Length: 412
Length: 176
Image 1: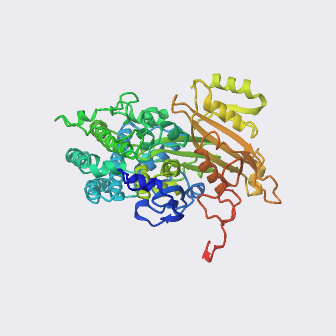
Image 2: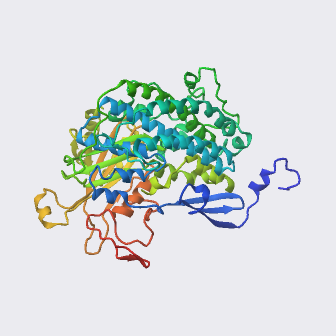
Image 3: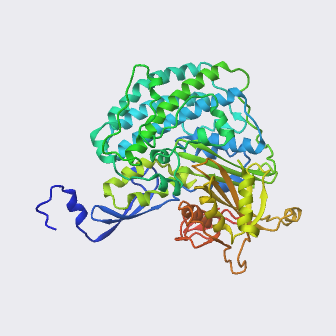
């Protein structure tokens, strides 16, 4: 094939074969979201094979869990997905409560929804900001962190910590919300709602962003399920599955009486739910799906997160009203040396990055016989290899970033 | 969940392959033999009205009391239990499969116990089984690339075994 008569310059890139080269990406590469090492086999600019190497952050949390009581293990769950520590606390708390058959009072239930959805917003903001960074856009990161900082300030007022909260504990939460906190939170939500369209201007509808993400790393629904992908990665492929709706009763009952949508493109029309208009009464229209985007590509995974932020805002508004209407206890945490009954319990929750599961086996002591953490990112990351085969080297960060992995959770 | 109907189907199809069924536990589980495991998993993935198309988690639990006094008090012999947590995207059901295997194939020679791999049923099991191999020391027969995943390749021992002892050092770094 002669190179003189080609209209599309990309054709040359894909046509020429060169010597294969092995390239190490990471473990310190800034776009790998932590200490992830990717061993790439490249043919010129094309990635012909890729293998993720993990374990650099392995702290054997499961073994530690066997040597601590259920209550003592809470801080270790913070350090799994440290960007959504409240959601990690909740997963562990619910699993222990399931084993103990312990129920949390109404006020504690709304407190948990409020805190966890707020943390989901913070987590998705990081996902959005760092995804921009991966693709070379620096400004969205600053906008995202400006808003996230306000959420962290709110969290600091509840428990004193800004990243590793240990706030939600088996039995309830370590403390009730301070007085006036919900008013501050509403104030933040009202201000934050106006900022969300800015993010869409910065990234979602940005021509360069669309060119870098639309049609890249397409994950089919069938493959997503086979590879055990969950969370926004699964829903980005058009699979209607969200544990807040479809999970176990102990988890879904938290959301009883709440109105929100599962963000997932309709399988026939390809349209996303438009319930965000209830949040924005002034008739805000969300950007249409660009023509180049294919369901299951990087752009869709990103967009699902962006729309989930609005759903979380809806949930936060409802939970503030419900929480304020409740009186009584928020639920006292279990005792430090609480004995666990003989038996085992497994429970998965919908953390921002996917389904986070905890499994506890007890022989009747206060320390569990076995603790297991099922990481969502662990399964999500595995799909990078098939997604990256055949893409350009520069698109690898686009694919990895769209999966939004946190290494603390993968390595545990 | 209509477990009973599914379990009847399982019993009919696999007979002695289904060892025990516990419906009263917090999460209902079915125990199967190691030899029937892959068949059961394939059946569960494809069975009409259930379709357990997602393998959420694979766990190995080491049952061993290192203290002989405590070992006397329990009614089980040392063994490893593998637990497969399955769920279905299509029907939103969940199921737990258990398999009991010995702790060693040959303890004197430190040969790992064997179990057939379910990597051919759910691709996600490839990494989950690698993790179980790495931390609990179980050899998955038929696995495409069974090697350590979280620990370094030259790590010795299986950390989640109850009789594991932390090494004194690793490449000049102090262990304990």
